[in-house]
Length: 533
Ligand SMILES: Nc1ncnc2c1ncn2[C@@H]1O[C@H](COP(=O)(O)OP(=O)(O)O)[C@@H](O)[C@H]1O
Ligand SMILES: [Mg+2]
Image (cartoon, rainbow, N blue to C red; front, side):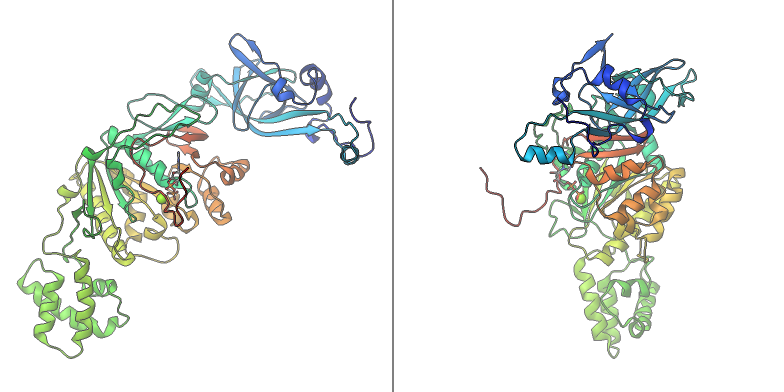
């Protein structure tokens, strides 16, 4: 027998649905022994549909409550028949197990007395809607009926209502819809035109996911340039190894050596890369001093300016070595310290008489990795600024193909606070790139520290696990259609699952990101190696 009704018995009904519960309760949920219901629940099928529950209580047009009669998880899609519109799609937003176990009951249990617990699972379902005869997504304006059977949503209905198209010519396959065997493909044209961001905490799976996206770009012959501060992307040349997972993503390992071009500033450290060189053309004395460690900009400025002017008179392209030679020849007082600074710059070997040509750097349908590993931050910013401006200007006049610019560690290259050398070019690409077919893929573990002007232009968002409250706030304020419940979900996402919005999809979706075909280079370094068993 259930517990004696006593004064501190937990109220089984929800506040919105006090009067409706008992009927649904008897009809649908209570005919099996209360305990372990989810395991013993009968699954009933009606014409290929699997019933998972029954609507009870007060029913709204935005959400309803249901008693669960078959295993059902949060975020799963369900469908219910509406008397006018036919099947309407809904998504489980919350599940609650209601029990009548009281504090007294717990006490009795402690003393070994047998206590029978009556419990049931209740789900709250948010209504997504249906497609009308003009194929527009609509929400019903009259509520569904209490007592109506709820079914696990059929894949066709999910795809239709949510707007997911599988195996399209322009789709980038990023993963499978959580809980359903539906491929989620983002429209590549939209990604380039409207920009993308991938956000999560460190180790949340950003680089892994962006690698998957870049693989899709390479397959579709999209031109890509990756700003890679840690040298993580060159491993994409190699075939990956796919670990067995509980889901079959239909991925075959492969490498992309034939599609990848790699350039690095430090080719001693990154031996397989081509050297990346820039001319000093366009840099003035102040820029050059900005790259050195000197605090004494003012005292060197005139000296350096004079040296550069002398060189400009005689040479179109000159190197740091040329500047040093002029300074040494002039033999001015205190030029020694400046020469030391410039020698340091010269060692980085980024500046040369002959710069890397853009048609070497960017090739149609290829992915260019700008490997900045080993380069000091201020130099990285300067290089990224040069490349960003070149891509934007050349794209404007159609000298390079439409393409995607991928920026890892975006909070460093387009920070919300302060100004770095490449801050401006990212704002420009974010706001104007779409007009010229220059798309941006922004990746960061500190969304709150990324320039809002850039982040807010990213209309496709891939959000992985985030814990920092400021970052969650930044994400919430830049994403449309992100519900309060989802903010909470973001903190609990398992590694490998993302919330994806935009990209041609009409609502935020939970997506299990597909495994990589190529090798992922961002594995964390183990300081204490794991013992292999
Ligand atoms: N979708 C995924 N499937 C399987 N493993 C993943 C997935 N995403 C991330 N991982 C694992 O998590 C680790 C960290 O991911 P990574 O992308 O490097 O994180 P970060 O967000 O710091 O760039 C990876 O090395 C990989 O082992
Ligand atoms: Mg990373």
